[in-house]
Length: 518
Image 1: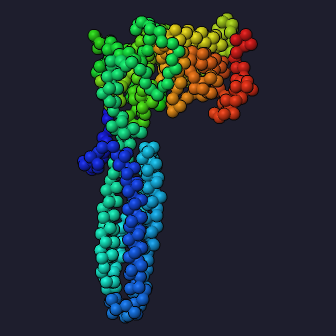
Image 2 (image 1 turned 90 degrees about the horizontal axis):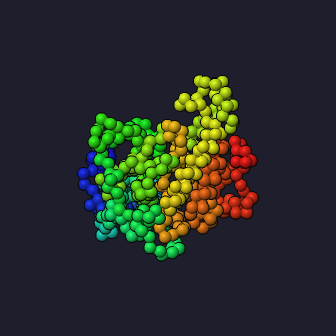
């Protein structure tokens, strides 16, 4: 069902290092590259010191074939030029190689495909220039008859040069294959992208401890019934009742509904299990195979667990099912309810021009009748009454979520969707964390944080709770009543921002469509 990209190009049937953990091979390669360049520079310097008299003091050398040079002084000048060009470029080449090795090590550590491509583009041409100059010098000396006596140093140097030539070709091959691996597998190594058997078993059968980079702070150790709302959903087994076979889903890949850190949301048609002729329009969250990292993928798995256990609510985007057959390869399809009008933020921004700033239903009807052809989906532009209704529905949805001992953690207008009837449903539990015998948790600092919507205790101590969701709810209402405005739009995240928020010097202004009573 999912399309997979070949890890290596068709012209590369054999994998370097047996195709095992190329990231580590690249790091080792960078270190070896520095040593090999320094060794080659040392041998070349020794050779230059040994043969310089034969190139520059031809009158006193009895080991130099000067018959041709005596007749043509320009040949000596040309020979010196060819030799010095090779020597000079060799030092430049080896110095830049040592510098590039440091960058190569960092690129491998960060698995940066774009910079790795630049490294290949810059180093491969410089290598071929050096190789060309070496061959030109060797051919020129052989054809000109200008040569120095062969010593063990010459033999060792030439052996080192040819070994270096072969080594560089192999090194470029490894880096090129690593680049192809990043292109197909994204920021994670293929071996790391695949879940371990224990991780797969933990998802399907449950686990006793929460995962996902979260440190939980134990408040009490009371025993609770396994089916109580406050039980740890993430440690429970996956419900097989939600499993959907891939043949029941028809994706509309040409028109994505949205893209996020985890992947893409697609509109799809879901066939009825008993009667394929009966279909429903749904939304499907798919994993982006190129750049879905561990944090985002685990967040999606947590979202599946949470939605499958908290139950259904009219103001929450409910889970319909999931395709988990290829979970080990980090492939999963999450099927949820389809909300045709998208998120509240985009809807309000798109309809600012026809927003009706009025709370009197009779006046609203009169204003709509004045412009009968200006409407959205036949219901007219959004009104203040709509904003009030959405505020109430959002509160109802969040009350249900908190009653199930769940922290949303990312409530914002962009994560509240509109149904065909223009009712709101809370979505995107990607940052949600479930509470079981805990009242707060500490988020891992590596996770992306929506700081504009975060409560002060979340910004200062990274503590999240139902109270911090209440803060985010207030910011979300501000978005509603500004028709999709950006909170703290002129601010950037810094310690100064936190301090101003803490002292009360920085607050959100009163929204233009919210009265003092609101």
